[in-house]
Image 1 (cartoon, helix red, strand yellow):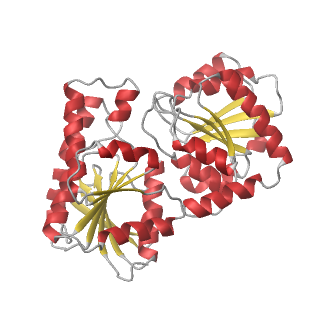
Image 2: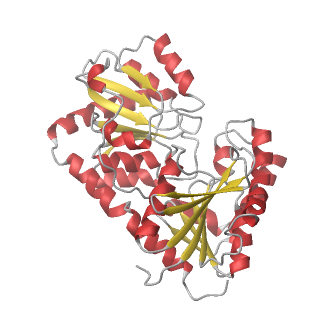
Image 3: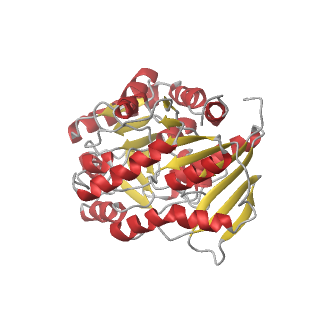
Amino acid sequence: MTGKSLRLALIADVFPPLRSSGAVQLRDLSHELVRQGHKLTVMIPASDIGQPWQLEDMNGVEVLRLKAPRTKDMGYVRRTLSELLMPFAMLRSLGKSPLAGVRWDGVVWYSPTIFLGPMANSLKKASACRSYLIIRDIFPEWAVDMGLLGRGLPYRFFKAIERYQYSVANVIGVQTPANLPYFSKAGLKPGQQVEVLQNWLAHAANTGCSISVANSALAGRTIFVYAGNMGVAQGMGILIDLAERLRSRDDIGFLFVGRGSDAKILREEAIRRGLGNVVFYDEIEPEEIPGLYAQCHAGIVALDPRHKTHNVPGKFLTYMQAGLPVLASINPGNDLIQMIERERVGRVCTDQSVASLEALVGRLVDEIKADSGLPERCKALSARLFAPEAVVRQITSALIVKAAV
């Protein structure tokens, strides 16, 4: 505990009822902030409300939805323009709300997106308080790594937005130690601080799941589950190749649950190859995830090998909390490699070789059957590193440091 109750603004572009990992993370962070005695207002853009603002109470968390342009599920150009306008529209809507004149003890904001800097800066200056940026991926660098973006004019535009966002923060919390060197070259001002802020996940009870593995084609098998976004950043094509290599093993099954730009492609490819060891389901509610994982034996983490920045995917946390060891196909040098190997909570492949993954699956299946302590090691890692309590103490301590703002 910081010993002081703070009046905090948390700004983001995702929050329940959205079902993304970021929305779930922010829900858990908000509940823990309130549990530790802080007065919190979460501010989120909303394109679907008819008035400038809408104030809600979500299990003790004050949520202020602010009228702003839609930014999801649209083309890159329109999305960029909408995200550029978003913080200014949110500020205009905030000015018409009952919270327009509130003075904040601290401003926290969450990236992605990189476009919320102007709003964070406005609230910070009006209240003469400190600010904390939680950064969960480094954009536009990862888009360049993936070949989605060159280093031309659009890149320079996004870099300018990124640098402005960093300039607003007193403290920047990154996911892993491997992210720290990037910020040593980011041109931060004297007095700005960069620190590792681990990802977090609150305990979630098993309340059941609409998916029944026992009633699927995978009944009776050792189940490898992937639940989450299936997009270009995940590089999941290799998992379909892996399933094809293992099609003759009727004791192993692959379960994919979620949505994303590649979900339909992957599903169709599994059908085209006639893979009876693969089953796809659409996205489910976050509350159903513990019930899903209770029916599975291992979790899959996939990151495209072209990534040069590092992160600990939210799904890794959910697997650990559920006691599921992981099969990870990730980029070389990722901090997650050492963590998985040091804690003995799964197997890691970095060479993008289907043969390597196939061998690791065999070893992991044998380990699951032979090592009764494996689930407890996973749960212990989750409790030690990824509990929200420590994250909230770290953020609030940074906001009350006696320093120039």
